[in-house]
Length: 189
Image (tube, rainbow, N blue to C red; front, top):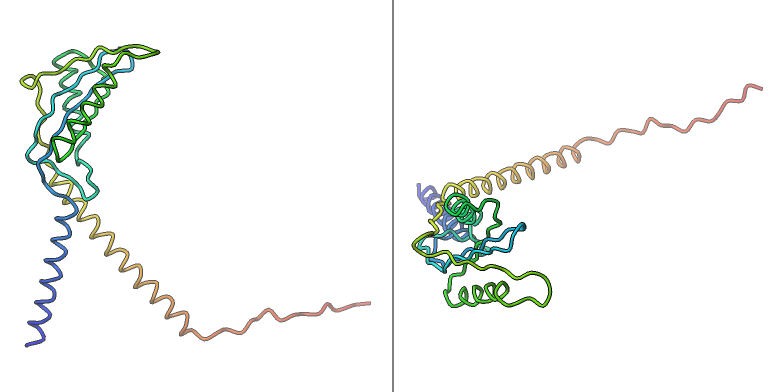
């Protein structure tokens, strides 16, 4: 009876630790973000202002989860509201506003300084009241990732068990004598 309680406590600690590890793999945090859109066919470049998103999903490698969906929001706005389809859109984010402001200034400087060679760009700023990024809910994706990781671990565990079983069976089987006895040619002359 006492052993059952100890086993249950150990299992519950293990499950709590694995749940904490899962939460570490992705977090919902406040970030600052801006978008930039350009096209290969003209010189117009659009910039969104820096804005705050309260609940953005960040993975353990500090990547913005759903970043393509944020860039699709900007692309769809440009295509539908400004009638400028086929724009290449990117989003840049950071957890600290000051760092993002530096990135914004550097990127804006790339397009506003007069070039020594080549073409100059027509930089257009999208107003805050015209376009805002909407938070992307990635909880379903996180659940799928966690389930895939668990499935992979289980598959690796069963694969290791099978490998051990096969090795054990090979060791237990007696060695069969080699039937390939060297035969000498018979001369019929």
